[in-house]
Length: 93
Length: 184
Image 1: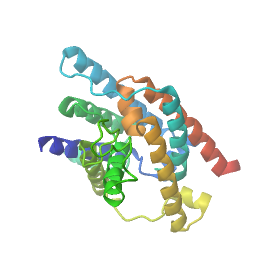
Image 2: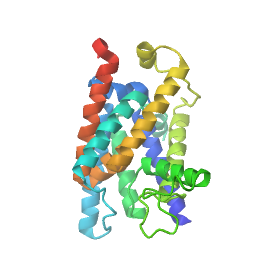
Image 3: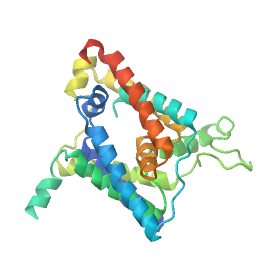
């Protein structure tokens, strides 16, 4: 039960940050692919950098063990990414 | 206090500030739940859950698991932790819109979209629906979406994340170029 409450709270933080970054707007998504608005990449890369530093520091301190890291299978990741991009550009979400 | 209130009620934060917030949330997810943030997996679990109720034989496969089978399903067709996270995400997005007082029902109000495709809401809904099917299918192949694979994978330095980012940028640019034509 506690884990569900944690999930809900973390989800709220997740959704809140997405909303405030403007990822809910079509023009931000579309313009990222036209390189006229770099919001998405700035947002994503900042998040990755912050979490990356934290996660490795926490692991170094022994506070966490890594959860299951997404598996790398080059063809699948790449083809999936290519299909994903078409959908993302069409839907604009 | 007043400044904090004014800050929260802004419609759009600097992407760097919002990114730091997401990074901290992603970090807390690992710390508190030993899990990674993600959204697309929850949809797959829900789809499997509904599908197994409607047509058990059709949805009895390796992806959602076989009844009595020994192999672990790739996506558990049940209310998983991710599904609760997704509910929270929707609530969080709503909260974000409420704090900036931009919360309203929209069928098609993006000026740029209207300029490219026309003002009809049904087109927006149809393209959104088709796009979402393609998007979710791609996420299924790759093993995650922009949050579950690109951001959560990226922070653990999984090569998969960066291959995926390259993939969706390439095809996204081509798709937008095809749609926009000379207006690119």
